[in-house]
Length: 331
Ligand SMILES: NC(=O)c1ccc[n+]([C@@H]2O[C@H](COP(=O)([O-])OP(=O)(O)OC[C@H]3O[C@@H](n4cnc5c(N)ncnc54)[C@H](OP(=O)(O)O)[C@@H]3O)[C@@H](O)[C@H]2O)c1
Image (cartoon, rainbow, N blue to C red):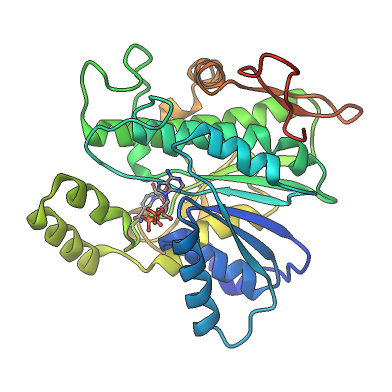
């Protein structure tokens, strides 16, 4: 295990960062840490009000905050919202933290008819990253995409015959599938960047261990189970580390120079807490055939087709759903 903490972040004045799900938990603490060292952070939140509340809270509790924070609406359960966020992005982007997520909720569907955990945790971020690729490539230095997974990915499998749990749905299996998809996506993105000879954008995957956040109460609340909510709260109190510490792997994965195509998580007790380190993910997550298949399916479902081009050409994510002029991320 390293002894790295958020105090080891470099000075980041002028670095532009997007954090999805930044109004709560790990995303909020990552936003605070980035802003403390001078980065300009866009909080990409499905509720602008909750994003503004998080900004106000961070400003109220920090004595010195050199970085700027702004809130932009982004609902990962709505591909139109993802497109609007990316279309509204101006200029380069240095770090994209694909962090937002939901866990173990009863089956619902996103605006576009995807099972919500797969749709928000994976497909929304797949579409967002593709649409922001030109902005990432426009970064002066090496831009980084960090995708937040979970140790639960180790129990996951990609059920290509029933991706959306229409025939059979188990809330934990659906979560594990979405979190395995996060790892497969992060690795496949790095492979595709490498294959295209693009070295100014890199991709890393992380997991926070176990951190006490709002994540654990969403499922019980959606089920209307006060007992499960209280049990989750008690388990958090006993076993979880703080959201602040839970943000360390994502922060490390955003700035370390040895994490391209790697998986980063806490190195302490049962990899549930502690300082970040590079780790091995599940055997399944290294299956390149599954990753390639998931990529094609994700592209079909979202209508976002990454067009990787090498250093001499532009990289664009084509929106296949546009029938007139083919739209690109910088249209
Ligand atoms: N906490 C842990 O122990 C743990 C363990 C493993 C992995 N993770 C992962 O860490 C990430 C962050 O979770 P957290 O623990 O910080 O939980 P959290 O406090 O519940 O934060 C989740 C964030 O995601 C946002 N979100 C949910 N649905 C969204 C949507 N449709 N569009 C945009 N944003 C949406 C939430 O917004 P609202 O506030 O508006 O709902 C919230 O800002 C997740 O990917 C989770 O799977 C967490």
